[in-house]
Amino acid sequence: MRLLEELKAGARYLERFAIKTGGKVLFVRAEDVDSIEAEGNYVRLNLGNASHLLRDTINSIESKIDPRTFVRIHRSTIVNMNRVKELQTWARGQYRVVLHNGACHTLSRGYRDRFEDFIKVS
View 1 (tube, rainbow, N blue to C red):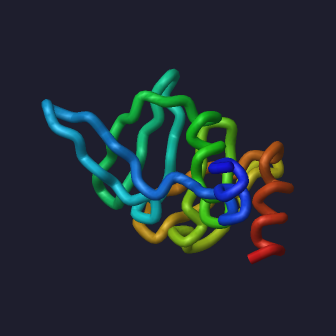
View 2 (view 1 turned 180 degrees about the vertical axis):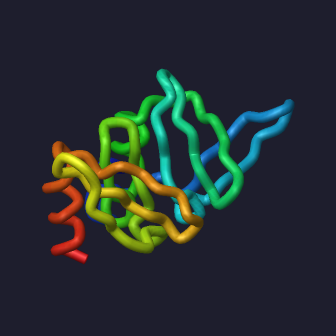
């Protein structure tokens, strides 16, 4: 019965990350995250000038966050589309995604279709 209620309510996505650091737990709202980068069995959440490590894989995180806000642009990078400032042409069919905070990430050819589909829907 509960599963039916959840399906009727629509998909629920991760609204905040709980990050264990120095004997405490820090809560970070998903909407405040600029980008997420893979680092082995960890992901780095980038927020402005700060970053936090979270023990999880990028594939797992991707399945938990809102696909209407976050899009994977590289096998190791997910960006918050609300933080994207511009797209620059780069070498060999790749692009650079520039965020409002000045950070640059590579949009690889393998993820370009997904990125373009996101832009068309938005």
